[in-house]
Image (cartoon, rainbow, N blue to C red):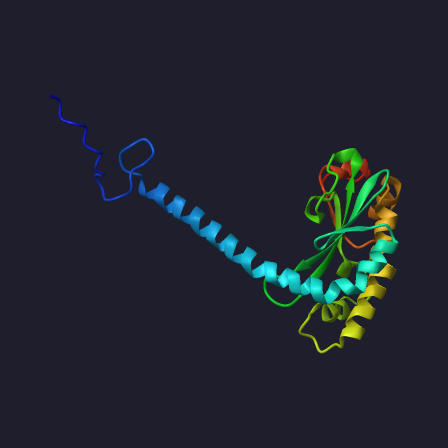
Length: 207
């Protein structure tokens, strides 16, 4: 009778590879780095989730009714407004490093994609409210939940800035012509324009 096959024993102290034998040290280092990156990502997610809830609790009351009145629909901490040419997006983003938030704005052009509910991060034209307001330092104070502002002042000022700067910007750039004019204006702040959107907006590839 034949003796049963014995399990393959590593020859250099390392874990076996999928093909048998010993996994090279370089592969073990790569696998270890991937596992560490995944663990760090999960840790950041656990840190951001409660912060996002806190940001929403403190800042959403300033803008929820305002955005609804302008046709935006809420999903989590993101509001979207579809139109014939684009989907306008406003997002409240919690910082992973403190009780702080960002107001992200974006436009997703229907001519360049088929997403119905795009996130701000995949929009073809993106900007932060801080790039549009005249006093970015004051906005930073408003969005910093640890700054010594009363709730009424924080919410009132944020609502005014969204009303005067965020919504008009989204109104203006939610059409191809409006976005093209805005992006080509020397007085416009530099915001992100995706590679796909540059031909649509008649922008040079590397501008």
